[in-house]
Image 1 (tube, rainbow, N blue to C red):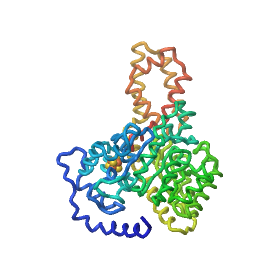
Image 2: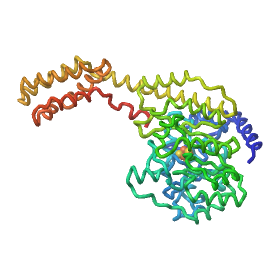
Image 3: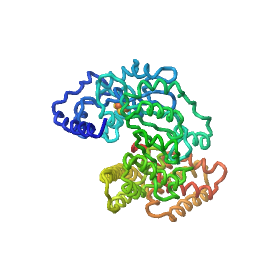
Length: 496
Ligand code: SF4
């Protein structure tokens, strides 16, 4: 497909919007996880490739192999395994009964065969970034060979990024998780079987691990060279590898490259992408860009608490390269993710983003990048509002200082009556509570007395029994009280 047909197809798809009021959607016929026609109409309004009758075409056009040897139809549905290589051949997998069953479900807009992620996104009207969007470009329901092949064949990787895990990095698995290597499922026969599929694929995507370290991918690129393939090949790399062999493939095949790049500050970059050298990655990014002829490069930034201020700075860099930005949110580890920041921190971040002045930019991708940036800023605002609501609910149910003292006194009196403590112990406990409370800031005091009251209410006199088990240790008591001023993890259910 050349740029001219791409262009025509784009306009054809846009014109499909006229069909919107006349589309007839599947009726559901009592299916439990079925997408209602009302939801479909809402989704169709924002669909980049025009409105369509079905919510997802992935089972008709997309084939994905993961590092466990399993074939699925998209990264978000790992529950419906179409088959496993080498036990099943690629042909049996794609044209097999499980794939057919999933197709039958999605022909009815039924998400019950492992599509829980999309079901949730639809329920909350969060359509952007759905893995089905990309398949829309090739939308069809007649079965043929897959138009998109996604390969995540191995976790071989030379880095140990802080937000990553051993499932996608062999180095983390070995050094951080101290686990044995994952079994390698893919051999030369896999490439042989794939040969039949390659001429039909319009796009092939290579993930890792680090794709430029995975031998099977080099064998597939050799096959593609033999058939003079014009398919779009996409690689997501950490940018640490570039050698003559690779330069040759990048020149001869139709590659696009996404490089993970999280900060313009060397120190911060190297603290996130553990094992990478900032100068090398930056030099490789610039050379990839030249090898791709100045088009087809994107940078993928994962904004977390540590690097969230770098987002517009990296976009400025993207604009100078005429590269596109790809902002991918971290959901886990939650402690690093933006959605677990307090509403106050998120508000400050949003203001920082809105006040950032971009360098004057040229190039077709700069406009896209700025749009993507403001979509991201709006997402920050969504987090901020959601967390504000959670905080309001949390503070609303917290007991006041006065109530905390009433509960404390009642429990300590009971403890004296039951001979758990003497009057002198009560004085020491009250003194400790006052001392720690007096050292805190106003906002910390609020949380401190609230937490203290709920703990005492929950545990009653038993907490005094525990405290006195080995005799009253005032230092230990003070340490425990100090922790009462820490905000509990109130955001943990906001997004997950
Ligand atoms: S999880 Fe979503 S994108 Fe994947 S097959 Fe199901 S509906 Fe399609």
